[in-house]
Length: 93
Image (cartoon, rainbow, N blue to C red; front, side, top):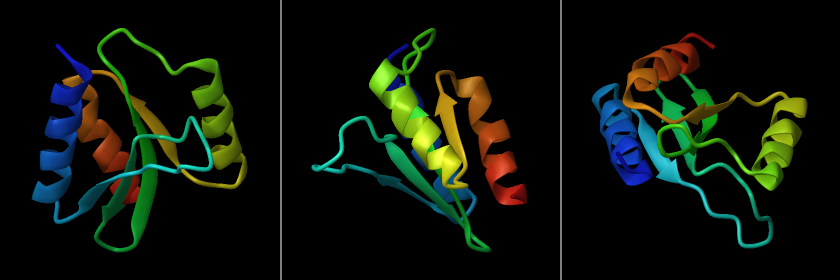
């Protein structure tokens, strides 16, 4: 399975919950997570998408740590089975 399949499934699942799953690109800062997840009730998190068995690169890990240090939720999704749990956690935050 490819990363884009996981990402498209994540986007669809977020929409079904009434949320937005926005592609995040920051031209001035490499390594930022792929998606901004916005759910009803002002619930928000960053999500890095990966192919099954893949993990964030060192620069991505650095960016994830920076965002978490600022108090933001950041997840890494690398399989379809994680999607529901990640969205549940975001909604309950």
